[in-house]
Length: 402
Image 1: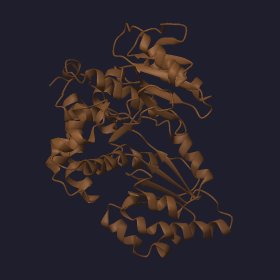
Image 2: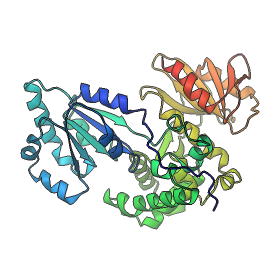
Image 3: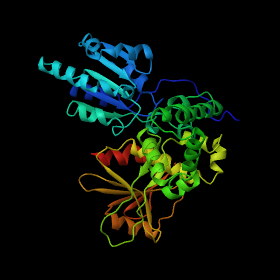
Image 4: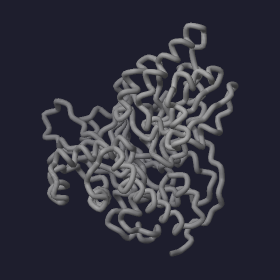
């Protein structure tokens, strides 16, 4: 296997740091969520704040044992920012945190008490949302975004091929990156998902992930997945809920309003990290990806993830498809009602289709974009522009967010 992208280990600044510090000044407790190995612990340890920091890793038995009497133990660190890593391992302490927060609030200490790190979504951490309502804020730390790795040579192709998990992206060579991704997949199917009560055999979970990889960017068909795995569709849905809650997959909902058109009402499904996708499909080099039928869908999923990790959570994002074949890869709607339509193409010379223009009118988009890998931007029509990924992320989305 070739050493396609040799680089050295570097420390990459995460764009979310400013937002995290701001939230710690606003809320008594902040939960930094994201997939395992995405860099939450490293980021938490690198924070520069005025308070002293006390850290506990709840996957370490010795640290977990310290919380056998959590109120007594945590009260000793009332002057510190207490970081509790892998908080989903001890959901029973959330009521204690609420009590401690309220006690400190009464003496004028209103923010920056606890930073909780979790590998599950707010839905899987539902108890914290209920117990700490009004006292807690959630921030998601995704894998490295393309905008965070621009300083590295060949960053676009390398980032697409290896994905955004720091240890994979910053590997010495492609072989080391692939091995990291393989170990990551194994740890999920053999250890982490069983911890969450998934009783199916690891080999079947691996098959499910591989099938999702082969269907990257396709419409989600629960019955087809269930029949292939010989399990019920509702069980498949449960597994997908878990995989989505653990930040492994993304289900992109369908756009639907009363338009009179026959809309395809199925979500699209993506493996969120392109490096994990390529490893599941046995693609060990960029050349193999470029020659594989999944290439276009891999690029589409990669671009979707870069965009989704930048836009505000308050935006509504969906895909649009009709039974007649008209489609838009991404429809982004601001709360104000402004709409963008995005088509993702791995070509440098896209051709505007009449169905895309008509679809823009249907979804109410005032501006459309054909997203291409690189090259200068150029108009395709009065309302549609071809633009490279970095320009779109750096200019169009920034303007759209204002």
